[in-house]
Image (cartoon, rainbow, N blue to C red; front, side, top):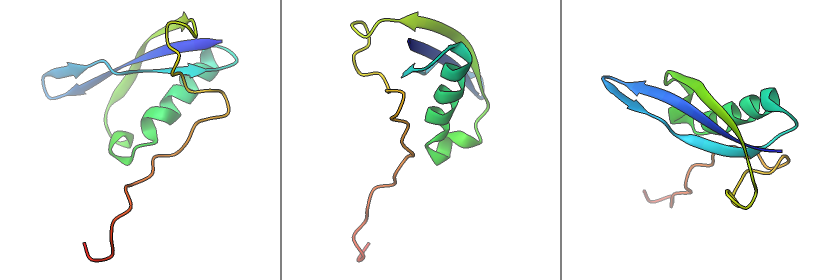
Length: 83
């Protein structure tokens, strides 16, 4: 199944609502995978975030979902040695 997981992130007085779309076995698995995805970037690990919505969606609606075998850790850009 494909799920759209929406987060609420508060920075100061501003609220953000990013989301990710993942393939998962069930809703709990989808929540775990979405948290892995958002935390895969080191800047996101320490921010205060909460899952506020979970929706089952179709592949046609979100064709660029993260497949069940595809959670990849964030990779920093490679820099030249001279930088």
